[in-house]
Length: 120
Image (tube, rainbow, N blue to C red; front, side, top):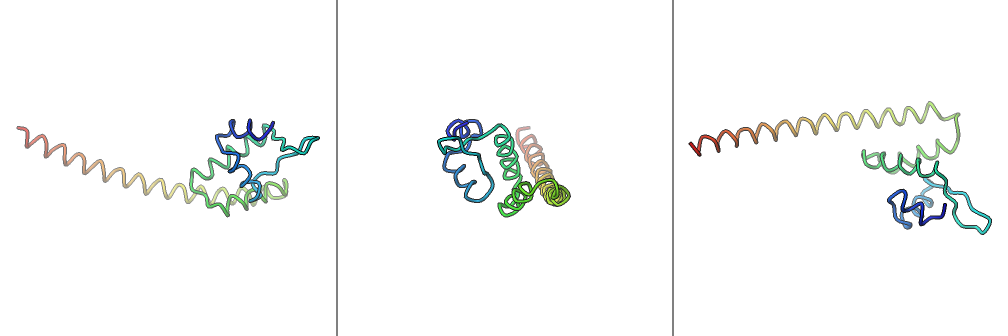
């Protein structure tokens, strides 16, 4: 598929897709006339990149993962390790956020109690 269609499917701009190519995150095939030719597997890959970015994986780590992915099955263990480290960081961050949420809920409950007492 052409880059415009690919951009629409992935929700990324053409500019971003070209930037990802420059970084080595994407390497679409080319059709007979030299235009980029994206496949469904590229859509799946971009969606995974978006998930990694959404979970705050550093760009350098995403690039490393992409390099390992391009190198083939001999890098499966290293890719899994990279994702495991990221999952550990994400789990710590989620626990911190859960603690913050709890403290906000405690504070809101205090306000609810104070408002109830003041309205009586």
